[in-house]
Amino acid sequence: MSESSHESGETTAADAADAADLIVAGYAFTGPALDLGALLWDGTCLPDHQIRIPLSMLNRHGLVAGATGTGKTKTLQLIAEQLSANGVPVFLADIKGDVSGISAPGVPGEKVQERARDVAQDWRATGHPSEFYSLGGIGPGIPVRATVTSFGPVLMSKVLQLNQTQEQSLGLIFHYADSKGLELIDLKDLRATVAFLVSDKGKPELKGIGGLSTVTAGVILRALTAFEQQGATEFFGEPEFDTSEFLRTAADGRGTVSVLELPAVQDKPQLFSTFLMWLLADLFNDLPEVGDLEQPKLVFFFDEAHLLFNGASKAFLDSITQTVRLIRSKGVGIFFVTQTPKDVPADVLAQLGNRVQHALRAFTPDDAKALKATVKTFPNSEYDLEELLTQLGTGEAVITVLSEKGAPTPVAATRLRAPQSLMGPIDGAALDQAVKASLLYSRYAEPVDRESAYEKISADQAAAEAEAEAAAAAAEAEKQAKEAEKAARSAPKPDPSLAEQVVGSGLFRSLARSIGTQLGREISRSLFGTAKRRR
Image (cartoon, rainbow, N blue to C red; front, side, top):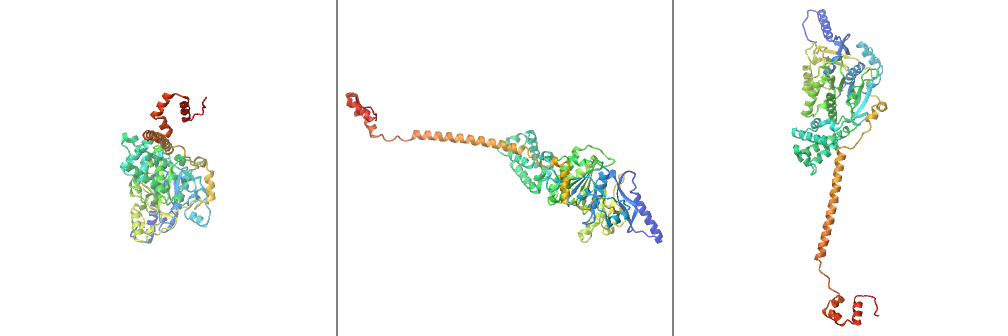
């Protein structure tokens, strides 16, 4: 609480009550709103002072931050289940695997009942309609895949961290594939196309529009290899996922909660960020401009958001910043869930109008620095935030949101409500059963590897190789025949036999012509081996 000098304790108490009333007045909205909890003031929870967030402002994005164990995931769950109850579809990126319980009713207990009494909550165990997904089938869930063609050269260049020249070359490769009917479905299609275009047969194909240098092709192929090692091979393929599936509502009108199970890929941040880029870009391209709505069409929650930004390239950060800034007009809200605001780039943080800040620790100089930086991101308040943020308990947070007019509400220390769904993961058997019972499972579960660029280029190469081999064999046969003929002409004649010498002699010819006798005829026949007897 900010310090002020007063004549008496009674005046101080009155001023405190006035300050609390002033804070809660900033959360008295006229339209639909989500209930977050009750105001904390001077160490006391005031159940009749409710802190809320307007439903219409959920597309203005937000941040849920705090140290490990302070209740960030439960806050995420609390907001998500109320969005679902209001008919708003929700997307949850579940890095740790502990929010699948949103699909099942919560378990009543003493702690839950105590929290409900503290904040005047009518707690009822409730599960919400949920679908479970996985990236390319890595881990449990309906596989989410994208084709290389739909991913496009711009996003692919950003993911592969190509420079401008290399990005332009990749654009030529995609253009060539489109013009020749070569479907780029998975990464081996792209790899085969790149390799073909720098081969002797493929080089002329791009000559008229700039060509593809061997050096640039090598850079792209090496980047693809590194990308594949991050697990991207499974993400690219068919059947391609239709992102409009995330916009569905259940038969009873509640919004479907789409839970992307990511524990199996939490050590593959590039794959996670790749999916995020594609998903937001795809939705942005498909959804119409709608401006401000009474409620958003879809709200995303990205848990462990620091994994998105650690080591990210400038191109990726620029892309995320632009997408966050523009996708609001499509009716889509994004919440980042992480440990400190500094985990989120400043340009992105500036777009997050709704803030739920759980406790921070100040055990080290770096912690103290992060604490001071966090305090500076809040509007002026009636609290000593630097002290308060180190004293908040689990399930308590400092909150400021955007009012229905788009202005920041007063900073409010809040004891948060308890989620009504299961606060923890459902067991593996129940998760597997839920996945296979989904109507989407038969549509997306089995991968399809139809004929595409890789197969077409391989077939052409095989045919060309076979033709070349046949031509080479014919040429070799012709060469051998010519060499044999030449050898035959140049070979020395063999020495004549005794008989040939006699027959060829002049004496013999003279004798045969002059005598003409029977004896001569007999000798002649016998010398040529005839079996005819003299008469």
